[in-house]
Image (cartoon, rainbow, N blue to C red; front, side):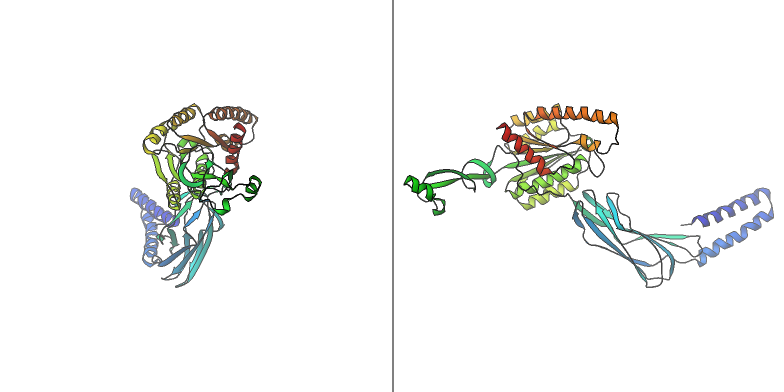
Length: 423
C-alpha cells in the first residue's frame, strides 16, 4: 500500500509527464525522470514485508455482564529489523477499554519481543469477537507500508448478570404434585407448622408434640404445610419498541438479566421453568427441571437482540397449543396498555395466571434526558397514565413496577406485600 508521500510523488510525476506531452516541453519530461527513479529504487530496495508472530492470551473467554477480562498481546519479530511497527487489536464497541491500550507503536530487532496488555469491561450480553490483530509497518523509503493481520479471532461469551433473589417470593396459585419449595396451603411434606392432629400409627417420634400430648392426656402429632413445585414460563419482550433507554442500559437488557435471575431462583426451588422470547420470531425453551435447563435458558438469552413486531396478543394461541395448562407466566415487558390487559384476560381464561414485571421505559428514557421544565411536565403526565394502566392491570394479574436502579428482589417483595394487603 502506498503512503501519502509516495502518492504525492507519483501524482507529481504523472502531472509533469502530462504537461510535458501536452506542451511538448522537454524540461517537464526531464523532471519526471528523477521522480520515477526515486520511486523505482524505493520499490527495489525497500524493506520486505515483516515476518512477525503474534500470540494473544485472554484470561477467560466466558464471563458475566459487568465483569472484566485481561488481554495480553505478544509480538515477536522473526524477520529483518523493523524500524516502525504499529500493532492494533480491535474489539467491538459493546466492550469498553478500562485499562492499558490496545494500540502499540514500536521498533523491533530480529527475534525481539514486545508485549501489550489491556483490560476490557463487558457491557453487553452476547457473543463478541476480539481481533484478529492488525499489523502495519512502514517501508524505509517511506513510500510504501505493509499491512497484514495475525493471530486468530477470539470469541468472548458474555452471559447475563444474575441477581440472587434470596427470600423474594413469586406469587403462585397453582402447584404440581411434585415436591418443591412453594407453600401448598395444605398439610404435607414441609418445614412450616400447619396444625396438630391425633397420633396415627406410623408417625415419626420427632413429629409427636409432647407438650400438647401431656396437656390433652393423648398422643398428638404436628402437621406441616406441604411444599410443592410449579410450572413457570418466562416471557421476555424483546421487540424493537421495547428497547427503551441506551444501548447498554435499556428495558431489554434489564429484562434479560431478570429472566436469568428468575430462572436461577425458580429452578433452584425444584420448579419446572420454560422461556418464550418475543422478537422477529417467537423463540422458546420448553419447560424442564434442573441446572442443565438453566444453561439452555442462558444460551437462548445470550443471543437476544431487539427486533421484530411479535405482539403479546399472539401469546395465548402459542401457550394453548405448546405449553402445559396451569402454568404461571412471568411476563417481562415495558408495554402496559389495553392490548396487554386483553392478552392477559385471554390467557387467564385458558388456565394461565400471570405476573407482569414491567421495567419502566419512561424512567429509563427520563434518566437520559437533560433538565427541562416542559420535559418534566410531560414526564409527570405520562407517569400518571402509566400508574393508571398498572392499576387497571392489577385487576387481572400481579404487577411489579420495576424502576431503574431498583433491585429485582425489592420489586418482587412489593408484589407479595400487595397480595397480603388484598387478602
